[in-house]
Length: 65
Length: 261
Image (cartoon, rainbow over all chains, first blue to last red; front, side):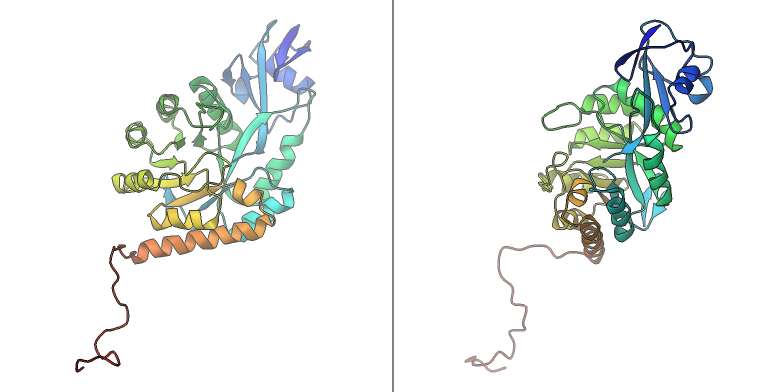
């Protein structure tokens, strides 16, 4: 299916958020996730199903002011 | 000691972690300034997948400082609230420096969205450090919403213009004696920081002025010294300026006087 990951259109076979994080090689321990603008806690990623056209944000710690 | 939501700190300098020439310069700036709190953010991981987040986070953890995550770049209540929730999970802290930008030219915070987002986050147990303008009524609303820390701007972010409106900043200090007040943004030189501390501000948040200095660690130390000096001056009690001169040397016994004594 086609989803938007951090603003970029991608094809994925991942069915849930946890699988997407795994497939993409993100560091599970330091990223936070949101689906369609809503925060998804780490503990709920596996049960959060992905659907065509979803917008996923995967954020990591960065320098900030 | 300065109090942030029940946690006390010796250092009154909060340091941003962005725009340094190297990670080493950031580490040295934190060490030389004695800063105990640094600001951090959350940004998109590259869609290709990467582990770049880990390196920066390891560096910050090695500094043994308290982190204050921000919601920089958010333009709406929803974005800011979602980002705050994400930050709480990643950084493991209820603290959030709440930024909701209302104007892209000045990066002025949107006061209306700021109050709304603050209410939502306080209800979820967050301890909010609102990045705000120096508006007195806005400050009242934020305190009503549960803020025990307020962070008015000195000048727009990154401009280094110092304290654009000292009158408004003084008014805030007078009006909220029990609230921890931090000047956040616009500080360009240690003298600006000292001036805010002399007014009785509790702390100063600096990023650009240190990070883009010719020698960031030395500038960080200079800021720390200025902040200490300003604080000490405030505690010592500054004199009131007057319009007319008052001789500091005793006039009694002055030489060449036609009068005795």
